[in-house]
Length: 243
Image 1 (cartoon, rainbow, N blue to C red):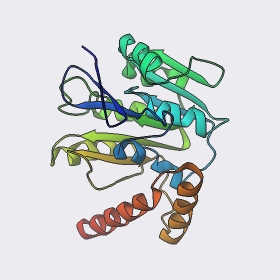
Image 2 (tube, helix red, strand yellow):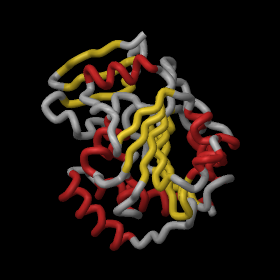
Image 3 (tube, one colour):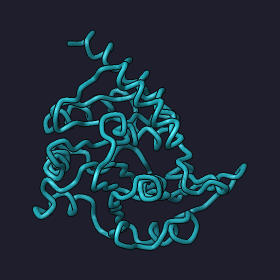
Image 4 (tube, rainbow, N blue to C red):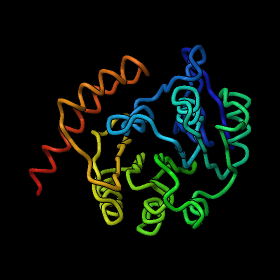
């Protein structure tokens, strides 16, 4: 059962539980309201122009709308299992109709990434897959992340929302590390949301360059990218301590 609530100018989507599955500020429907969803865009620190962006899990369509409206001429595809979620995003969350740049597919995300025709065809994959209970990432297995990696181009990247309790975050990160050259993550926000980024090729991590890029992202797209660089710096310090 899908529920829509409104409070202080923000409309939220719920899958029959108190857990927020997506949000939209009614006066700014094409912006990204939730911090963890903004963090799903941290790949922008490492790549500017990309040709093909895919979201697995539509939520309230925040990522789909943002990428479609702000990152032209990239094509944007969203994969969503529940047709009611697609309908409610179109009627209540300002999701535009499909066109030559935007495609919303009603299908299983696992079927999407395991389709051989999609090998090496996607530049950016954004994964946010949860059911009503939202107890942990759906489809989070070695085989799923291997299939995601196979879909990506040589310089492709994947961001994943890991909504779960520590130490489960680490378990999901270790699965990603089996199929990706490098995996980084930001500090937990909200109540358990941790966003990780996985790279097909090891990234160049020069923090002066990243911060300059973050300032540009903030100025042009309105995303708080400086906080991502700070978070990645914390990850690198932590990772070096454990290596």
